[in-house]
Length: 366
Ligand code: UD1
Ligand code: UDP
Image (tube, rainbow, N blue to C red; front, side, top):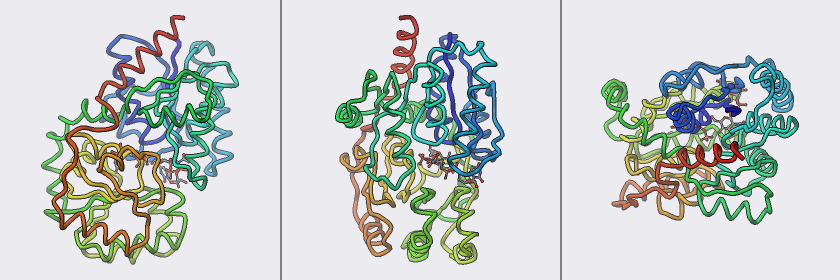
């Protein structure tokens, strides 16, 4: 089959894993390319290993770090790799989400006449400060098959008059938890032994519009310092780098009720989510994962907007920004009230990858 799958960052590997597994289950061949946008072991290879994914046919080592040159470099390398595999005869490229890797892959496919299937199409934050919002809008407008996770994302696409076919499939992140949740058993004891607190909030923070801004980073540290509950904070490399550049690393390290850890493997991270009391984050994927019936955690979204309104509408998440007074008040509220969360996820039923595979194969046969 002439399918190519492109990944390049942590969330893409996790969210494409169920589709890759479904293709493998059906004995369908595909070319698998990793662009190397994320390159540390714990941001990329660990997920390929843990999730039992095949070794990528191509893995790039990128020379450029800034977005423009990096996107250009990825496009050039993608074109060459596609030529090396299947003699450039791929018919469909499957991409997921809104990173620079996905923009590079989408534009490359467009120029080479390869049809694009966009997994997680139609998300909109309406916040033009975000590079992800630029990327997702452009990708959706060059995609032939738009796999919208929810009715809301479908509506966003209809309002923008995208010309590809739209399918509501659910989000593959729910499939991923269904597939891999049992693996928690293998790591839970070890992971939790290393956590210093009985009861804790799990925090992640890495969005460019947050951590590249000194004032916001300072506010985030204030939130951590004054938190009424201990915090476990698996730190993203971008955030670590910024804290060091801004000379804030000592400040954050001195907070006694804060446990900073390296980025975690997927099973380890699911374990930390499952055992947390509350999640504070600016991550996209975490807002979805927190709604899975096996996780079910309240989320404070440390941003001014979300492209995952379903989590808010269904009572899992609240968009609270990064003002310490507001965030700490909301945190107190969650800790002092009995919170009743739904027992279903608004992001799907765990069959998104089956639907995406069915549609992809049916279009290939046309
Ligand atoms: C990227 C995505 C973001 C996604 C996130 C997932 C874009 C525009 N952003 O953000 O949407 O939520 O991935 O985690 O594509 N770094 C390392 N090691 C790594 C990876 C990154 O040290 O393995 C450092 C590098 O110094 C790099 C910086 O982090 O310059 C930022 O990495 P980049 O991939 O540009 O963006 P992310 O912040 O990871
Ligand atoms: N994740 C992980 N280890 C971590 C932090 C996150 O495995 O230390 C997983 C998490 O379960 C989710 C994905 O990585 O599936 C989210 O990635 P991230 O927050 O970096 O990106 P976003 O979703 O914001 O694009």
